Image 1 (tube, rainbow, N blue to C red):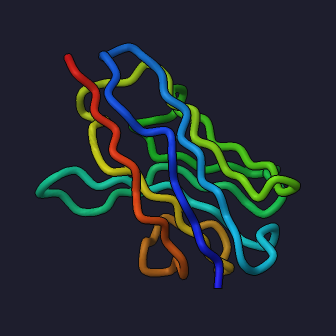
Image 2 (image 1 turned 180 degrees about the vertical axis):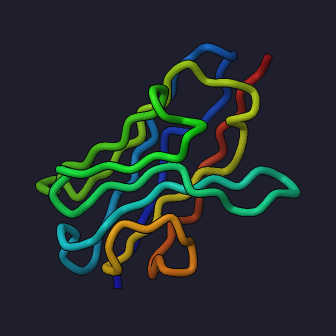
Image 3 (image 1 turned 60 degrees about the vertical axis):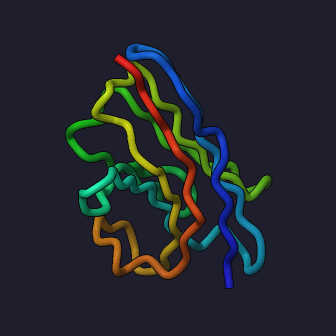
Length: 123
């Protein structure tokens, strides 16, 4: 089992920044691909970004490329999502998730999920 806990969400004005953190505990963290997803009210859960086990490869959905950066620190069992130039459409609950299936945008392939952290971007 891997337990994941997100933090760092909040209310920010459009154009602002937030850094989300995902803290992992339980099994050895480093073999897992970590992904960030988000879900807005009335919408499906959406892939945002993923990072491979050693941080050497990252993946982003087009809508956040150039604005969001995913990173990880395996020594601290932490993954981060730096979000810059935030837009009202970025408002959602953000989740981190872990998988050993390799980098993927498909939510069902992730084995472990955090409880989510709310991000609200005001216009």
